[in-house]
Image (cartoon, rainbow, N blue to C red):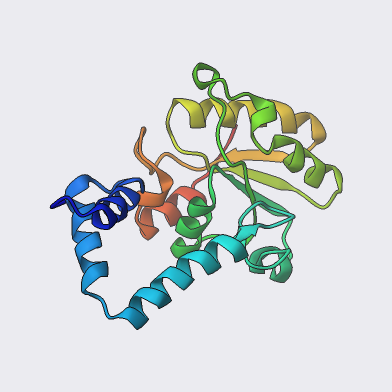
Length: 196
């Protein structure tokens, strides 16, 4: 970018974000340079504050700025919805069709990528179930090969514990990500879940 090192570094930093190409990164860099100093300082503080203050909930693994997230601390439910990532919790919450608890796996099973059961938060899910009070586990992983394999594995793991295991309905297109589904589709998928 015109051989200005600081602009090149800023553009590279933006382009390292998922879904941000070189042109978009350049636009972001220009936008930051055109901001007044107070706005840039506030932007930088917001980045640093988020990085230092946001972590995983000790119970469900969702993002929070407390030890326990708002959902775990305010809801009483015998249903746990299992998702791949915290952004999936946000998508399901926007649907307003689910009012139970969550469990975030932080990944899915993928032997091709070397990710097995010990690499995602399955042990924590089993620990929660073994504490009692869980009647149903809804598996809401993405409808792709890894998501389906993970759902099947979870079902085989949990059914012997006497807990009902369901899978969200396939209102979500195969190969798509839950975070991109609209609220109506997600609400319908949750309502039409099935046993697995």
